[in-house]
Image (tube, rainbow, N blue to C red):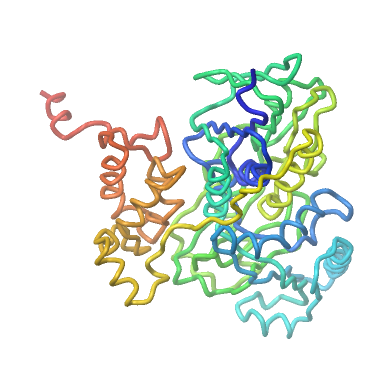
Length: 484
């Protein structure tokens, strides 16, 4: 007896995009996630860029899915109610000797089907972006490039999948997978799940899961990228995403506005062995500042409000691995999803769902819910509408996060909606409470109180990001008694 027809391991953008697309069909789906929420791995710490598709090698799966994913974004953002903007991108050529590299990117982009690509000369580039380096000689302009909120996109996929019957299990790390005569047994600490098919969307851990069932081993190397985030006061320094020419380790360090109005710089690219190694380093952040200064001048580095690091799942072939394991029928890998994985995830969802549809001969649901309404944001309302809202629910008139002007009503919504927040970071990803200039210095105590009230737990049980990250270790009274 199977618990599910399909188990998806991983609730990042790829896992939830697959779950959402697969939920179009008459099939029982479960999602296992080792962390306490969706969007806790690579999906939460990246450049938040929707790439146009000119960088991936012509004919590669990476190129095909990047372009298709980019094309899907406008409709998806409307249907699932998450923010997306086509701000365009520029790849800078700072030395005339490098122009052939720029032309190669252009030709590759045209071959990949990227629309509206054009090489601009110095004067044309500086008319678009006045704060670029004086060394600019030309640039590749891709108007179809965009920026997105990766948290809200990931959450939107998950909530819509859940509305269509997908069941999610958090704090559920896979310890072992056993091939059965038919299907698989997926062992976790709490229970063993049985499924006919398994989709491996576990990010940097995808190789470990693959190697449990296949003798054709896979190796994923975590590639760490460090970033600096600047205050919204610096958000208009550039209006487009500014790339340097790509190198051996990827697309290089970029400068970009974010969908919420900040300025983001990064990432570095360092291969490491620790698959949880998301610490920032002095050397890495100095590299970000040094390299971005070559592309964009007048960067107000004193307005940096935080730094962070993310891990990309680098596979030696530098290609997405989306296929059924040859010696483990029914085990579908979705591995090596490094950049442009965020851009490609909707198309990855389509591809995996289509693969399983054909293998399982699935029929579409008549009742598929293709839209989702995101959280109410009072800032989007007129003054009259906001006043009416506050009269109906006074919590929307109480500001908890002053930097981002997030209300108590929004925080309550973030906690109580389906697949709601269970930690400070969960609230942050859904509302931006704690993402502003003071980085939660003011709002975290009240947010913790609301979490404790709504989850019916004691404040010391409230965590930053799941078990082991509790913020309150005791009271002043406990400390005084210990000293006595």
